[in-house]
Length: 90
Image (cartoon, rainbow, N blue to C red; front, side):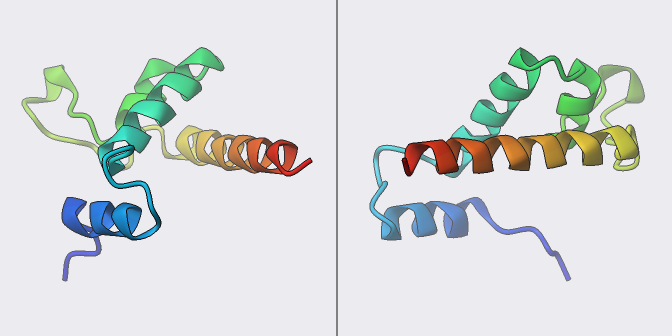
């Protein structure tokens, strides 16, 4: 069983909530990468979280690489997005 959600499923959801032609699922990866790097998160943590392969590992993605730091980073990112949402509701 593959627990990954397909690009098509994500883009269909985006279309159903009214953002068709204004946003695509892969765009959220670009946004995350930019925001995380702008806020000082180490490039290796960001690249590993986005499942980018390490060039020196012959195309192998180490899913456990930087796991604790990635958890910390993703919690920070979730808090950051929550803060953006809360500030926009005022």
